[in-house]
Image (tube, rainbow, N blue to C red; front, side):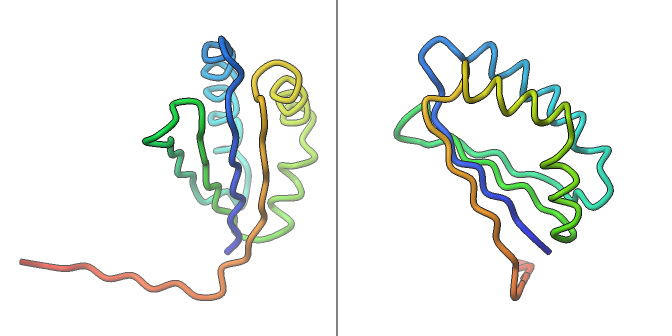
Length: 103
């Protein structure tokens, strides 16, 4: 499994543009073969800072999404009008452990 970590800050006044673009992107990415899910998070200290984790089956799935023409348009919109900064990390999960605790 692969994880793409997208860390970003919003420009002042860009919240509405961000929400519209995010909704469209979330609908689109769910249709991609190899997409396993996402986990959006926001900073408790700074309402402009966000991190989203996108889980993918493999590198080929990420590459297909990265090169999608609609996604490229949304990336450009983000750079030009929505984000004041952003960072992307692509990670491979080496090991995963999961526990469930009962009372």
